[in-house]
Length: 394
Image (tube, rainbow, N blue to C red):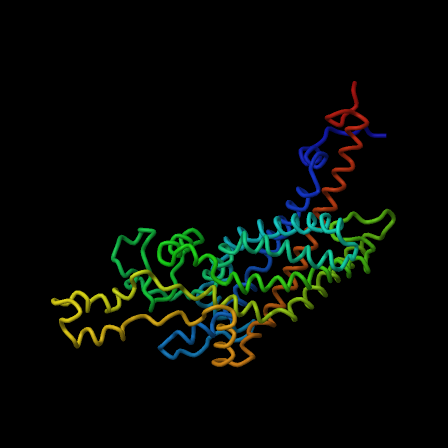
């Protein structure tokens, strides 16, 4: 029999790590992997969801350019190349890492806590999903707003109309004109410009529909747990029973991931369109009425009683209020202007993105949990038998 070798750093960490640490690490790795694999499809979905609102705001009367998965991909590739397909990858990675780390940790903690008061497995999984989803959504909403803006902007910039307040082009507080397309060059660049031109609340645009989106995880994860238990005999993140066929175990996890995600996406997709419209709408800039003519009237000699013609024309230059105001108002506006089909814009692409994303996330999560649990068991056995370093004393 071969003498056990010295414990690796992973084995040593796993030996003393808690279940919460396992869930956080496995969730983060799963989200990271999923984000990289599915980023191009996320870009396409966001373009399709956002273009109705952008077209309505475009006074030039330009027709829609994004049509379907292949058509949208072709336009993005022709205009922006590979960088366009991975636009927003930074915030995706920054978002998925904490999102799933927080989600899986809070979800499993909530299940343990709720079992003290209830014994219905489905109810426990349902409310644990709600609690975990709320925690991760509030914590990471600013990242997702930045991601959505980076993905939905067009590459056509008019850099000569960059700022109402002419400054050096490298100044982080430079402000875009209302008529110019978005011009965020990176995650940090977008964060600076959003904060300096729209304020802190811009990072929480779309938070209400995002919280309504908790219905999505409330459907997906109880369904996943139920299906995985039926297919494999084990709950989420649990090690497989001894003697179980490994191939059938992974096939069961794959099937449970696909079916639960299709069910959840079909039932809750419209809220994603509403959330995207709210996130991609820029907030009015402080003092912008002065930059667009109202302030000019106030500067006429004699104040408001001066040039009556200028004063009477000034209000016409004031920027219109935000088009989308809250979930109910946004729902009514979209329904009136674009019809009910708009609530399912990009749904086919979303399915082609969301299902692989969920599958990659869950397969990676389950694999990491299995490896970590195995490392913990082996590490503890070695420590118990041979001491702290897991090696036989000479």
